[in-house]
Picture (cartoon, rainbow, N blue to C red):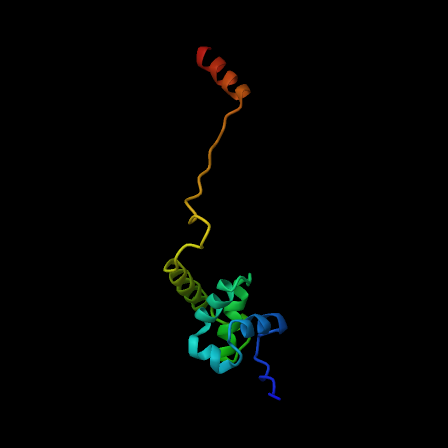
Length: 120
């Protein structure tokens, strides 16, 4: 019978279960791949973690509370995650997301008011 891995700082039961399911069972496993790769593995497995998990993983490796991660380091982690995500192929069966556009439609009443103002 194997002994359970010691509880990691910042990692609750749900996050620990996600990490186990992607093969990351110990602090050493996470340290070997890094916080960003560990976070990406959880996301790619279909789970929907927030960025707090990324910060929690970094805090677990630095042995500090996730809220103590400096803002500059948080921004660096997010930038690393976004850069790594950009290199991934698009999801199978779905087209890659395109740019978001906004179309403004004028109501007929506002067109009539504009026409009246033009002829006055």
